[in-house]
Image 1: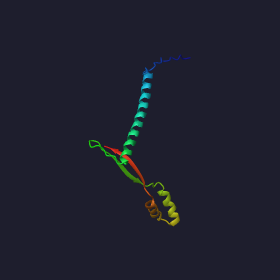
Image 2: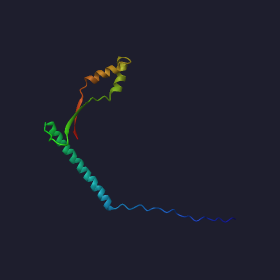
Image 3: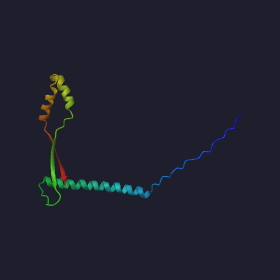
Image 4: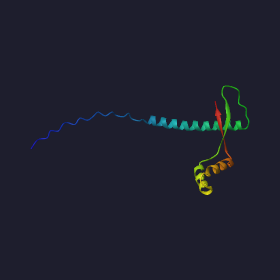
Amino acid sequence: MATQILAPVVPFPTSQAEQITQFELAALLSLRNRAQQLSEQIADAEASIQARLESDAAVEAGLHIAELKESFRRSVAWRVVAERLADRLYGNGKGDGYCDRVLHSTNPTLTVSLVLR
């Protein structure tokens, strides 16, 4: 019988990850809470300025500008389905015209946003 000689196992050195401290966790939680507070304060300030602009308040002359931007949007996510149905009902190729008529008779939705520069 042959004797087996086993090679010694040399472990690879492992780097020890730096411990996460309670201070780091508390600091992160504090930053998250502060970010939430700031987000709420920003929303309140924007709502206040937007409401005053909508009430025709003047903006003090200077470097910064505050104005309201209006945009209109019609919801057209239904268009492909409506074209297929119109093609079935009114004949092939007539769906596009049907959808155009529906789009033109749809009242657009007004959105107003605050723009600061």
